[in-house]
Length: 352
Image (cartoon, rainbow, N blue to C red; front, side, top):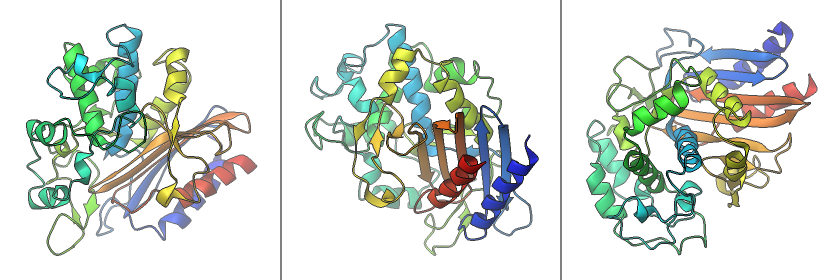
């Protein structure tokens, strides 16, 4: 490890953490010249009794979508599915037109209503965090045939769409979603700390702090009360180091073919919204957040946020000739991702 560079990166992390709302942060930076830097700052617990260790296990929330997309592309390579097939070819009960295709589910252009935006969703999670809505209820309510827009004519982020992709994987393989991800991604990459969470993981992950799952708006550890099955898209547990490894292996061709990766990188462009000032031309590919104009060969990655945790992963193909990943996990939900820290870290890497 380059100790001078490690010190510069740790200093940037410490300065940012001093202003951060999260008790603690894990950070992994990996590039093809300097290797892997696994760093941490702040605290494991909100009482500041235990220093945050490196490579803790966190819920990664929507970074899970990259895993799902990889598995779907693997199935397409195996001719088990075609990306432009209508999803109802595989899930026959869905009352959707044939224009709702697998590809459009992957890039959020299918028009499927997003169940997490329902007016009663947040209150339902708050009232019964350990008792998630049943899959059948979500399907009957949000997949009744009504679409937000004509498929292919607009873009809107839909967790419901990725729920359908999870179901599709289970329809066309002999395995559960969990086993499919484990066999096709986790085991080949030797990810020892990564797995699909399907029940409350008491004391198995870093405590995650949240203020909106109780009536008093008090910050509390939700890791022992929040059921990951509220995330109908699937929910993985992982570490910053192993998510960094995922993205490096994905872009080096160890998980899918170059032709599949090319399709994954083909994006539709979206409004900047709250990310104004960080993204220059934000887009979404197949399970990837993308900005081809961000610099350094383009930004590719994904973020995640939910009760107790905020996560961000990005891959830059060319930072002074180095293929570089930055992965940041915080043990509290936040209004936005760690964009200011990312800018500072990239500046250090680009000047070193």
